[in-house]
Image 1 (cartoon, helix red, strand yellow):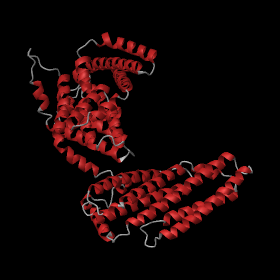
Image 2 (tube, rainbow, N blue to C red):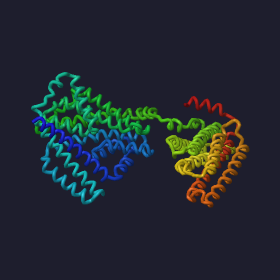
Image 3 (cartoon, rainbow, N blue to C red):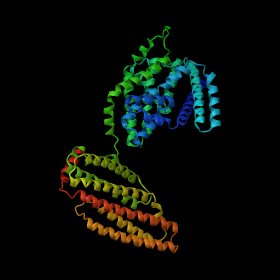
Image 4 (cartoon, one colour):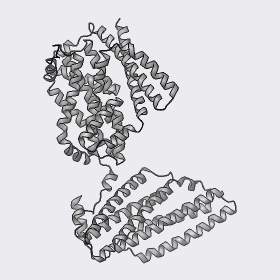
Length: 551
């Protein structure tokens, strides 16, 4: 008998989770870009963000899918952290809709009368329409049917277990008993990776008389807190923005869980005292659904005033090295009103960009296996610094610049463009490195290696901030490199026409060396124009001190 019931319990949970997956996957596929469009357009205000998060989560029945979409938007720069947090608030409210679905349909309607037809019709649509929107809706419909069949099996199983399993001994040990049921709810969510599934099981167990109401409320709290494990596991090794979104989710759920625990002995019993017009008490499962929704709404109310502080706090956490490096060191809006200081600050920041661009080029020329993680990080840093520099230049242009400094701003933009070109070409070369090491021609391989070595030495030295920097000297060095480039080019052409190397490889090496020549040219121009920005009376010491103080 007990084995039959346990088998039904396991099967019911399996069907329930299968239905949840089919329903979620089908709705996500059917919605297409609609989810992203709604999230993108509905975050203009915090309130709209909350409503859109609740709506989307209740639609797809998966807060995890919404969280993944949010992380994608934040990383793409299409949504800021504050907007993402408001959607998380709403998502936690939206995920309570699963409980209401179980209570209002699973316990009030003859499930088999519509669940089996829903499975049949849904699979007919899925098989006949394939993976288009109609087919996805069919999959979601079949998922709804399987979901409620699982609920029906769980309901019957728990009704049979009510006389076999008793939790009264745990319920009678006060706070320890509450914590035990919180742990049960947490573990259910952790192992099933779905708070909706865990809460549905608690609801059906309560409706079947297996778990007392107050203990079930504790388990609901645990399941709600357990949903943070999904977010925590999802961001292991992820980007800082993903970790901040997950941290906001954890903070919200821990706060709401703590508040719900404090009110545990008050809130459910206050619901029990409510009566319908017909003077009927609410069912225990309905009270649990109310409790779940209420403490999540209460959590939003409590977190709302703290959102700004939470965003500020999270931005100081989970910082990566590239994020720290991408923060401008010298640019400060407070010095825009002092043109000489602003110009030197701009020059020093451009010097940092030049260092990163040359580092990327040296790394690309030295790499044998294509672009590495450091190259990708450097590219991200450079692009962010370039955007900050462009914004700073715009602020300077709005002010009253002296004539001699006004003429220098175009040079600053030229420098930024030169170094961006160095970075882009370096990235292109890194993506094509492997073919260089497949060259079966010892003499040419040695010439290419020598040329690249000289280029790396040149890039490491051509720094306008260096004390011994001289545009004339580096112009001469660049000319020597150009002579070596043309000599190598002629040797490659001769080797290709004599069939000493494949023609395709010859063309590739010619194109790659042409890109290297462009790096040399752009790096030299960047340093030469940058030196013109620092030729006015020096104030670098003041800027260095200000930068250290700012850091």
